[in-house]
Image (cartoon, rainbow, N blue to C red; front, side):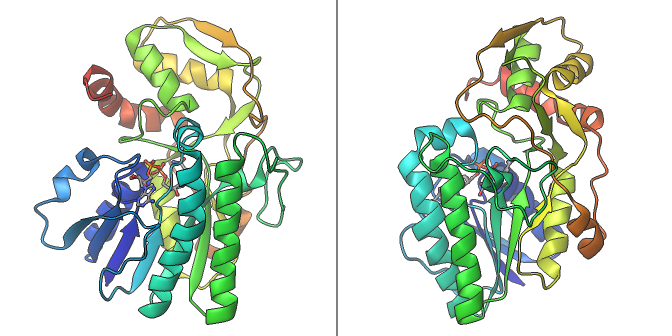
Length: 313
Ligand SMILES: NC(=O)c1ccc[n+]([C@@H]2O[C@H](COP(=O)([O-])OP(=O)(O)OC[C@H]3O[C@@H](n4cnc5c(N)ncnc54)[C@H](O)[C@@H]3O)[C@@H](O)[C@H]2O)c1
């Protein structure tokens, strides 16, 4: 297949490009490099089946005939979407409509990278796909949460109205090599601070929970979803739940760091609990994550060491 990956210069998009190429497909990556980096694609630039197009997907565009569109373009970390609020709303809305239009034109299948943030600060735990969420529409995080909720609605509308063969993956917190070191999320913050010998910053009492999925598990789940005919959202994430404090302990163990922990006030709308119910993915895709947090951090350690040492950040 010839496949389009939007946001392919980002963390997840670049791993998706790798996985699609490894399966023998040709990949066109469209990215405006707002939060992505060419360094994530450097190893692919000599590959004959790989094309990079510098493109803002909020402008109408075409890349020729493609059979699958994976729409991953969007700032994803709180640091990025708080800094690029309007761009985040644009790519979730206009950008998603453009990508759906392109899929419709080429009779291509379509997969939207959505997010657990659609559940907001959930009142239901763990979160099943049938839960409609608890989102503050005017809080600082709304630029991301509501953009993704709009993107899901647009995807379902193209499916219902134009019969585009669509899928929606709700991605939960994913980590691994190429994760931006300054993305403000728990793993990157802790790894950076531990490797620099600085105190690990814990917001609130550190008893809020997170679940962390290693990138190879996440990509495997997304590819499994791309092959089945399910149009409603599917959670892909790791249901093993850690308190932020437990996560800090694992990071200290893997890095061998002697850093301490420093407590700071909880930011506004910070979710207290986040854990996917992956029954649907297990049943539908026979998929489940295999890599434990400790192993995933060991597999990421070399990357984080290099990133911390690099002057790019
Ligand atoms: N990483 C996670 O844990 C996670 C969790 C939930 C959802 N997601 C979703 O997965 C997708 C990828 O996330 P990521 O972590 O790789 O983020 P990332 O910031 O590393 O990658 C996003 C990519 O999209 C590109 N982009 C942004 N706006 C664009 C535009 N208008 N036109 C073209 N390209 C544009 C960026 O330059 C970047 O390369 C996002 O849609 C995100 O919402 C990620």
